[in-house]
Length: 290
Image 1 (spheres, rainbow, N blue to C red):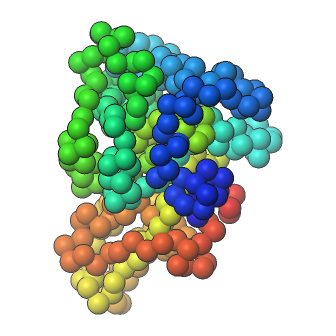
Image 2: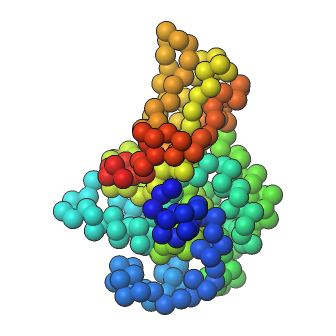
Image 3: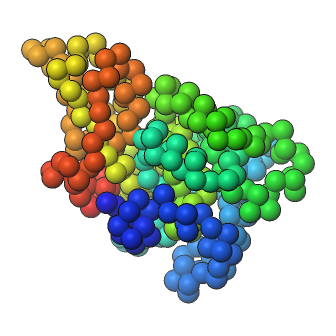
């Protein structure tokens, strides 16, 4: 279990605990340490600032959106532990396979598909809807921005699952994000146009998200070596053995997103709990070894 599970989930998956989605948590006063790190009095104040500085520009094409801590490369600051602590407090994520995404969808009452601030900052393209806000009605957002209404899709659970299954087929990595931990603000679908993925994985900066609670494993009896799955992997974890005619997955590189399974015609890839592989059971953050 990742550290959020121990701190905010009582040893269970933190993102499947209803308390971390509650309106009470949203409006509760932050601790002095949290206030200093996020420069807000409550999570509600932070989420409104996040909306106005990161999401709204992606809807309207307004200039100068905020990066919200998504560094684009290795940090030039010296105290990396402090930077990482800041990120974990303010806005941090974890990779989720589609099964756990659907468990989150089944838990929540409010799902809004909305444009992605990362894609806008990275590509200059507005209204690219890869992000799913959870609880926007509690943020007092819906209805207060009439010029944004056309870009916000309020979804039922079946519609949300359909979109995520589509993104799974595309090979996008699903992730869940906090807005002042442990409050959950949304689900995303990431690739190299995502600032968090780009800064952490491509540019090898400090971590922006935990690996999943799982890793992927190949059933060699079922694998035919077709290589279809390799095009899906966003983390460079899959390798082909010409001698064996099989695919192998490096557990140290696997983030457990599970999207490789979508292209396997033989159901030869399975998810197993990360703790079932002792050599990677405590590997959560690439750069820190923690």
